[in-house]
Image 1: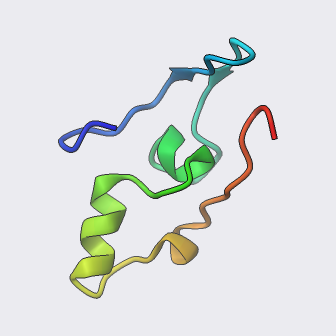
Image 2 (image 1 turned 120 degrees about the vertical axis):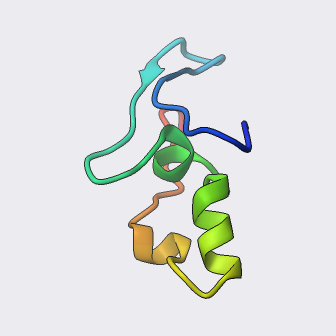
Image 3 (image 1 turned 120 degrees about the horizontal axis):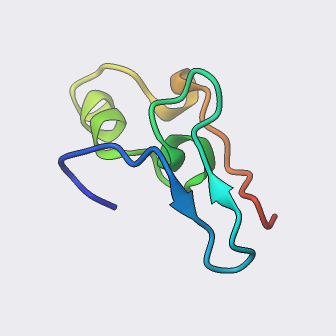
Length: 63
């Protein structure tokens, strides 16, 4: 995961599906990842937005 940018598209290595962020999410990591993207992590550390507040999901394309 890059630490200086959001990733808007990611191709799943298992099923080759092109993932895009869900509506209202900033990137594919917040929509499908097991951990939020660096900006959300930084916000959590500073008392800002948490992953739960962002509406992130742990569901992936192959789950």
